[in-house]
Structure formats: structure tokens, C-alpha cells
Image (cartoon, rainbow, N blue to C red; front, side):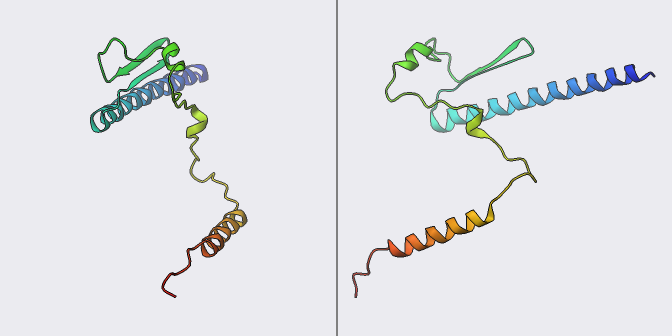
Length: 123
């Protein structure tokens, strides 16, 4: 087997693994969305686009769901919008902690709680 054929085989396996992982993740999300719907009565709509194909989930068959962007822009209070920046995950072993800052924050929190504690009315 030539190095070109081997590289093609490795890429093919890698694509298959990525597709399988994506399928599993969408399945897991579907289960979580169903829990949100059942446990909390939340209507949920999800759409993902990958490899030229849309994957959608809707907790209801209501024709008015999901609301259009125009409808959402008119709501008050405005919708809470999230992006990947709101959900950044720290990879294991790569978390950088400024211990001095954390310790000084703990000390200042403890000091403020001592000084802001209500006076004992029994004395």
C-alpha cells in the first residue's frame, strides 16, 4: 500500500468517525431538548447545518413555531441570545488559574462579609 493510499484510508476513517460523533451529538441534544420540553414546558427549536444538510428538532407541530426573526425583534423583554462565546469550555489540563488573584478575591470577600454582617441585636 502506497503512502497516498494509506493517507486516503486514514482520512476516510477520520471522516467516518466525525460523522458518527456528529450523529451521536445530535441524538443526545434531541434527548436533552425533549427533557426541556417535558420537564419545563419549554418549546424548543433547533437547527444545525452540516455537509450540505439541515438537521432540525422541534418540540411542537405548531405552524407558528419557531417565531420569525421579525417577531422576535418586536418582543419585550428582548430574547436572550447566546453564541459560542457564552459556552467556552476549558479543556482539561489547560486551565490557567491566577492563584494570587483567587486568594486575594477570597480574602476580600471574607473581609467584606465580616464588616457587612448585621449587628447582633441580642447585645
